[in-house]
Every structure is written in C-alpha cells, then in structure tokens.
Length: 349
Ligand code: DAH
Image 1 (cartoon, protein in one colour):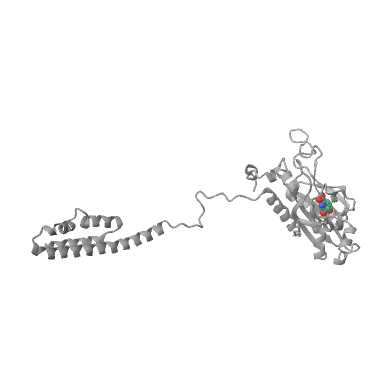
Image 2 (cartoon, rainbow, N blue to C red; image 1 turned 30 degrees about the horizontal axis):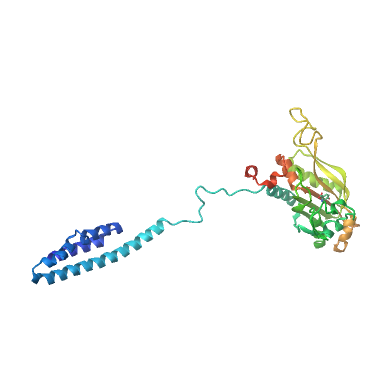
C-alpha cells in the first residue's frame, strides 16, 4: 500500500512542477487531491483496513497529502507571480501615446493668427513688439495723448471707468507714451492688445483688439508712414494693392490721416460680373486704419526722456485686428469672433 502512495506522490510531484499555468495546476490538484482522486480515497478507506496496517498507511497517506498541498501552494504562488508579471507587460499603457483615434488638437483662433501675421510683417520691417496694461490711467489714455478736456471719448458714456482716473484702455495708443518713457529714440514698436469701449451692436463689441504702431527717429516723414503701410497692405491683401492717405483728425497726430487700401474684391468699384462692389461699396477703396505724424504736444510729455520735437519726428498708426481679419477672410459679422461657434472657428488656422 505504501508503495502505491509513494508512486502517486512521485507522479503528482512531477505534475505539479510541470504545471505551466494556474489553470493546469488546479487541474492537477483535482486529479490528485480532489474528491474522486485515489489518495483521498485511500485516506477515507484507512478505517476499513486491518488494524495493524491502519497506522502506517494512514501516516504515509497523510504525509503525502500534506506534501502535495504544500507543493501546490508554493507552485500556485510562483505561477500567480509569473502571470501577474506577464499581464503587467501585456497591459502596459504608454500614457504618452496619442489616443485612438487621436483627439483633434484644435487650432489657433482667427484673431490670434491675424495678430501674428501682422506682427510678423512689422517685425520684418524692423519693428519690435511691446505690450501694455489693459487697465490704464486717464493720464496715459487721454491726457498725454493730447486729448482736450472736452474730448467726447473721456465721457462715461463712451469709456469704462474703473476709478476717477483709471479706465479700461480705449485704444492701444497709451503705449506710445509708456514706450517713449522707457526708451529714448530711435524707437520702432508695434503694440497688439485688447481695448474696451462702451459700444455694442452689429459692428461694435465692448472688447476688441488693436495694433498700434510707433516709429520715432530723425528725418521721419509722412512718406515713411505711407511706405510702411503700403508694405503692410501688400503683405496682407496682395501685391497689387495701393494705399492712399485721407486727411482726418486724431488728437495725438498732426497731420492725421485715415488710410485706405485699394479694394481687392473689384476693379474701380465694379465686380467682374458688372455689379457695384459690396465690399468697398463701389468706391474702390477700403479704410483700414488711422494714422499720422506724432503731434509735438505729445513729444512734450516725454521731452525729458530724449524726445525733443525740434530734433525728432515720428509717425503712428492704429488698426483694428478684427477689421483686418474680416476684410481678409470675408467674415460678415464681428460677433462671430466671440460666439465660439466651432463651425466658424474650424474654417481657419
Ligand atoms: N487710437 C486710434 C483709435 O483708437 C487709432 C489711431 C489713430 C492710432 C491715429 C494712432 C494714430 O496711432 O496715429 O481709433
């Protein structure tokens, strides 16, 4: 009897050691220690053996079962660890990989690309980019820009006041003064940024964007302004473009002009199919910005920083980024920029 027990044990030990995975091991356990297996049957039958055999057989069978139990437990632990390692390798997730399908990464807003395009053009012409505060003092926003005390833009109906002498800047022009306080001439800067006005209708939003330009040097004339803006207009609206200057008034430039670019949608105000051009309204010209020669009264505010109006001159201009983007891309309604309708935004960039 004990020989048979040894045989079973040797066979089972080999099977346990050879079990390739947990499922096979469980199978082996049932085969040798399960309810219908030979060894447990032997143990159950010990009571029926002749008394002189009971002790030896019972002991041998019990030892064999305990040994097999221990071996199975040890092997189970080994296999579980192996299987966990394999699963960890198999299930490894590289969190740096793109999703599947890769999520769309979005795109730049049309106003951002337009601003960058304008910046690139002026950087190419030798200008630097400067930025300034959106909350501005009345001094920089109006006084130092030569606005008369009665100028309507100073009124609370036109401008957001944050305090008696503090406004949300109504234009990017205050940076002309701030920049000249910080840097003696020559100075060539553009200033992109948000501006605020108490305006809200189809063509006005309370917040919009401008780019200011300022060039101060010796021997600067209106022709330099015109040449600079011609280069800008051609880079933005096509090489065929012309610009013209029309007299206008701004408090901080003298003379002041409005600058028109020749219409890129028609010839002499008439479209290819003979209709009056809707873009320039048949005038063949489109207004793009305000500009002028820096008023000596403005230099007077920064004279102590090296701006002597007897020795230096400057030109300045200011344009609306929304307006440039609308003209260039045929955007019909200003509010589209701020509605965040993805169907609109996805068409650009
Ligand atoms: N600041 C003016 C505006 O908001 C635009 C402007 C006009 C800027 C003439 C200038 C300039 O620098 O010279 O309408």
